[in-house]
Image 1 (cartoon, rainbow, N blue to C red):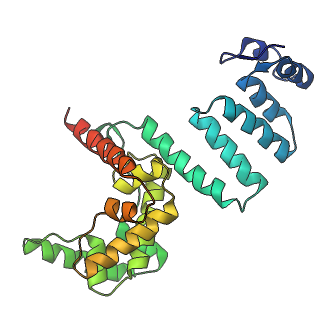
Image 2 (cartoon, helix red, strand yellow; image 1 turned 180 degrees about the horizontal axis):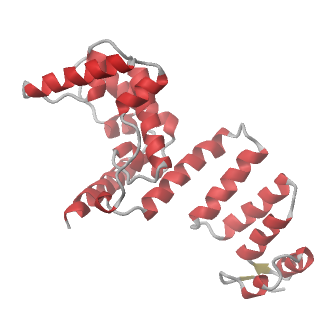
Image 3 (cartoon, one colour; image 1 turned 45 degrees about the horizontal axis):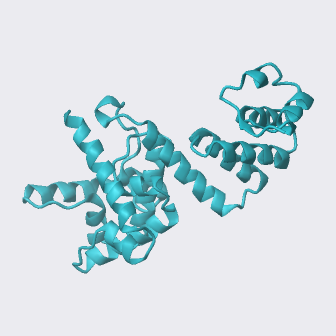
Length: 249
C-alpha cells in the first residue's frame, strides 16, 4: 500500500471530486491527500462527518491557515459551546490578518469605530458625555500634557477599568474583523496564540495599576502571570516594530 502525500491541487481528485466512492478508494489506497478529504467534506451531509474530513485534511496541511479556520468553524457548528475552538478560531483569524496584511500606508483607512464610540454603543457613556470627555482631553493636551482617552474617562469617573478593558477588546476584535493592519501589541499577541480573555484581564490590571501611579507594561503583566513567554513577547514587539518602520521605506 502506498503512503504518499499528494500534491495540491491533486490531479487525480480533480477528475473525481463528485464521486464519493472514487475519493474513498483513493484514500484507501494509501494516498495522504488533502484535496480528497476536502472533496469528501463537501459531499457528506452529517456535520460530524464533515468535521472528521476537515480534521484529517488539516492534519495533513498544518500550515494552511484557511483550512485551520474551516476546521475550527466546523467544530463550532458541531458544538457551539466549544470555548477552546472559539478562542482558537479568533487567534487563527488574527494570524491570517497578520500573515496577509500590507503596511498601513497601503491599506484603506481603518473603518473600525473609535474607543469613545464603542463606549457609547456599549451604553457605558452617552453621546453628550463622549463629547465632554473629548473636550477634556483636548484641554489637557493644550496644557502640554498627554493623556489617553480611556484614562480621561476613568479619571473623570465615567467608566470603570473593567468597562474600558472590555471596550479595548471590542475595538481589537473589530479591527481584526475589518482586516485592518495590526497596530496594538495586543493584536500581535492574539495572533501568536494569547487568548482574548487573558488579554482583557491583563488590560484591566494595567488600567488599575495606572490609577495608583504604577506603570507596568502589558508585556510585563502577561509574563508575570505566565500567560506568555518572554520569547513570545520579543517576537511580537519585533514584528510590531518591523511593521511600523515599513511605513517609512
